[in-house]
Image (cartoon, rainbow, N blue to C red; front, top):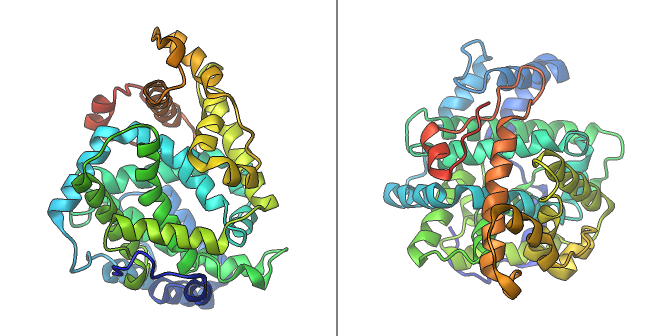
Amino acid sequence: MFSDPGQWTSDKLQPLRSVGDPLADDVVTELFADGGIASMNDLMRHFVANEYPVPASLPRVVQDYLEQSRDLPPWVDPAKIKAGEDVFWRFGPQLILVLTCYGLPFCYLGTNGAPVLAMTNRLVSNPTRRIVETAQLVVDVMRPGGLTSQGGRGRLTIQKVRLMHAAVRRLAPMAPGWKAEFGLPVNQEDLAGTLMSFSWISLDGLEKLGVELSDDDREAYIHCWNVVGHQLGLRDELIPANVACAKGLADAISAHEFGPSAAGQELTSALMKMIAHILPGNAFDKVPQALAHHFLGEKASGWLGLQPFPMAEVVAAPLRIAGVLFGEAVADSVAIRHVATQTGKLLIGAILLVERGGKRPSFAIPADLKQQWGVNWTS
């Protein structure tokens, strides 16, 4: 771990754009040597159709990888993980919404990373699947015991995502339109930025919604995602020791990589349209984009092509439907927090009803979390 919030600079981050994840990359290299793209496609189909548990028919090299990547790091703190799970228990709908309207657009700001994401095509052609898969990862790792249970669903989900990252590193440079300047796909800097979107950005989003957390809560939530980062193959030197270091890393990556790009705008537009489409009715249609602009600020929002909406107008209709009156202070933090909470619940409910296509299992949330959050839809 690193303990200096100002440690990372562009000069130090740039070399990491050519560094991958040897453990997972070696698995994909061997699979590719044995059967080429067909072999890897077969592996991905196995993972998609059998999310949990792992099918015994997987190749030996994959079984070995799953064994080698199973154990948690020696610095893991079970008490902090439990405290971080409690944060998710209390604020799950808001966190899912923040991830969708802040965390993902944060990732789309990378001028070299966003084109790689766009080249996978389905992030634009089927952004709904991206949201479902991202939300499922969060639920799997943050549910009680998701990280700490041996063979738990959270650990297995991470192992699969890590191997899929390695497949992208192998296949993306073969795609039309690939440029060497993008760096290695899903490189260590991009992986660190993605981790920050789940950890520091999530905490920053809650704060911007007016949700108050204790310092211990914040440190615990960062710790949970530090463990996830380690399990995903992020080097320990890129794992922040505390909240301040997480913010420092997010700021450094932003300074090094972020800016306007056609790919970032394309991804963001598809994401906003998708969220508005799956939310019930039309009273919440402008809420996701208004919140994204609220979270990101004027400059970054402009890079992504996000137009500002008057917050008072955006939250007025949902508040009227809910029968909540805030008088002249309709756009204050209380109103925004209320609308964001309701939007988060509606978004989770909508995701529960989404068909992921093919043989993919539906989005799954433990019954106790549904009850805690007041999300009673059934898939």
